[in-house]
Length: 216
Image (cartoon, rainbow, N blue to C red):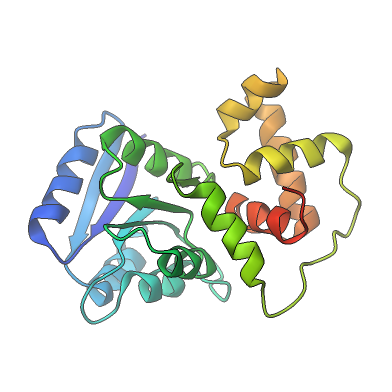
């Protein structure tokens, strides 16, 4: 089955280009396009795409607020959102992740990375542009949250600590499986266990917790 994607960007040429790149993938289908955040949220709630690809700077409602509306901590049935922007600014990255984004890319990332990010988000995974992963998560940890990091309800196993560190470094499930010579299903089991123990909704939040608790 195809991954259904909604693309939102206020620049028509960019929006059309992103849609063409994604539609060219054999297992991705662009089911909607929007030129502003409000329309994007409206379409997302009606179409329930597998992944939303949102620009940050949009009129009416920006990509951060649109993401929060669809994937924020108060949303009961969150959608997967990947934020894409021209601007490599830490403030944007922090805001996108806090709003619930499952990925963060720069517009010059290229077709391959864009496709990877969409596939990752659709699979409950997360992909952040490699050029900014370590920097942004480390800086996020230094800024701190309003409340202390959660304490796991159950101690992490040695293997979970190892998996935690690789997630914090931005590794995908396939890369983790190769590194530890384990199956993909085993990696997913460890990720699910980490999410349950940490109360995390996705691997981005797992990575944040790792940095906040000085695991990395």
